[in-house]
Image 1: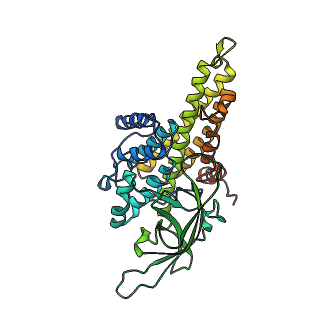
Image 2 (image 1 turned 90 degrees about the vertical axis):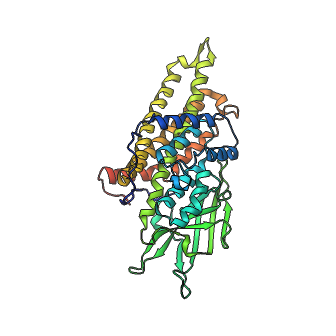
Image 3 (image 1 turned 30 degrees about the vertical axis):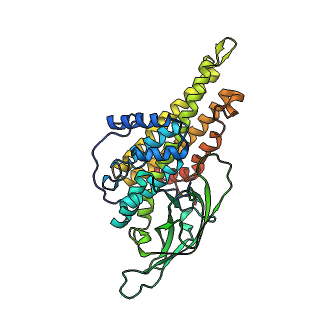
Length: 403
């Protein structure tokens, strides 16, 4: 779970061309349909979270978006979104997929050094290595331009190419730090020419001295916990910096748009799971000698939810397709809209599903009550619905900024 700048529209940067495809519709290509069916079959096995992660990695699903030369599938965010959506639709979504292969894997694949790619990408692709992502700070919230975590460079020894980095600051709501081998931290370095701080990304090993984690008690169920991080003069080698020190927002946004797409896929999958449970219940539950689904007061809200899910899926795969095609600016707008639409319909669908089942909707047997908080995550993270509306109002509609 992260909070990030609301306008995750990356500056343009050249990327290798990909094979032309039509990912905008949920059915996709023949290969994407086969992937969707295979992942759905895996989800239906009802494995534990650890077993599911290991099996998905072994089958190549976790790294489907990463380069083939580093053990990935060589596909894109479209395919990774398919994986998460189908696992979520089975009721067992590995939330760390939003972070480890989507944000961290994408950033390292696009901007990392050859050494960083060799060190991290094979493990991220197979699932044997996990990486968390830390950007949110207690006093920054949605305004990531106020990040205070800073990195200063120590003077290099004679003959060295660059000195160590020293990282200081705090992060909150960092997902899965306890199971991650490292965390990609967003810090800020001082521009030697202007004196202004600029964002930079650093890989911090979980055992680095001065790197402390404190669990945040949450009312969320699931296998991923949230943490506060304290970086107390964490000393990092020169090669812990990912990419170019001067690239700034370009590298950061490379991970944030996939994060929004993946959050949308997570929400859509859970919405489909809730709707499926509600429809089945409405089909067989008998009251006054007929199924409750025969009543329009029950049927119409579920039909409306289905329509909303399908519309949000179209925008989600449009955003993923634009990102994979290298159209970063258009992908930024679409990814924000997809995340908004998917989160809204997921919250609405789960509420209607619980209501359809009545008292049974709150029992452990049907597993819907826990989704009331789970889908709410997609509404507030990685960026709130209100900040997306701000973004669309001034970026898409040309209205004046309110902040």
